[in-house]
Image (tube, rainbow, N blue to C red; front, side, top):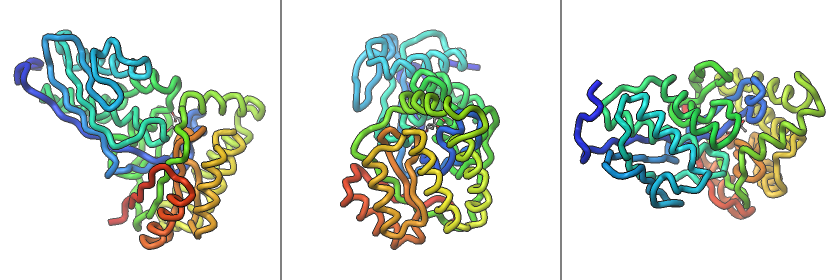
Length: 317
Ligand code: MEV
């Protein structure tokens, strides 16, 4: 390995994307499967350079020495140290610049995507190839700091370009879709903190015990969703999504505004709708029958107070 190749003025760049969890959030923390979708047009770009100074971060929320960054960004310090170690780089300052389209705390995988983009940029700087598993395990370091006990799904979803079937502890299976999936993803009126939501679910779930209650039911719904997604049976898939939203409500991770956005989408003819990601605020998603209904739903959700609306089309092209 020639870690210093390129010299201090060289820079590396990396990109990652946001994700939306179609089915299985929260249950996946308890070992059940989940399905994640890539948001390929909602991206994070990172560039890194080596310098003789201390580690430095430049992003929309903070500009300055990484050692003095707010504690929420502490995972990035660990991530950069781990990446340097994995690359065999002597301890030198790293300057990191982040340019992100993903709003943090909206359930769209912002923290994992930032981490994926940084690791890719570090490996690019050193001209090293990066195996998918190695990337996931490096990103996990930052995700543990951000979320406490992450299932690992966000790290994979931010780095793979297809729909994914994910079971904790295993590399995910890419899911080929037979036809396009027209989605509307809408940010609600408040951000949601995944760490808090996971803690709240732990408390709710304690009442039901292992293998029962909303978590187990979400696991069943997710298993039923896999063949519906792959076959293109989107009417059935939508019904499963709406039922999953009811179970997530039973776990107390929906909010009034998320429920209102879900009801709006269903009233306007969505095939299904649910919150996506950690909840407690954050985002919801609706499944549209086609591109024109997708645009109508996006408009209806904007009118219902969605903070931001995305209209991804996943797979099938
Ligand atoms: C967050 O995107 C999904 C959760 O299931 C947490 C996790 O899997 O780490 C809520």
